[in-house]
Length: 167
Image (tube, rainbow, N blue to C red):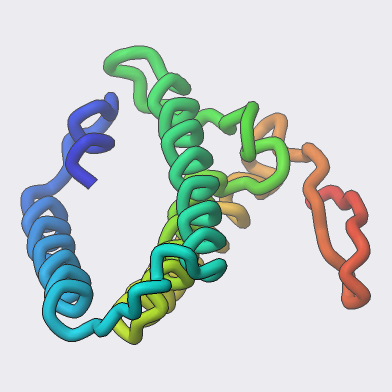
């Protein structure tokens, strides 16, 4: 939360948003830490649990996607420039909101690794808050108003097969 905002170029962020982010991250961090340190009961075999390794792997993949996508987004504009540009490269070749996808993947991996109600609640509310943003971002990015917005995207049909389509 803090690192990305310090590295971005563009419009300044309103103080209200910064303050609410600090409050949310602090409360969430407290709830996650309190549960893991004081409420959870781990068995001696916990560190060898397949679910823990799978969760750490999914979290790491999401973190890598998130960091790389943020890097792409930060370098889209020159300093002081405010124009909208469509990101290219990395996971942006597969999904229009790769940064959103990476963050959702991260916290779903954390929920899998922690296997706790607070972790699942955080993953669920991350999906609920970022999902609509990703949806509207995708609709805006591929609207006919923006030049160069007709690239192919992956779509899963009802049988799970992958097919290309244009927006």
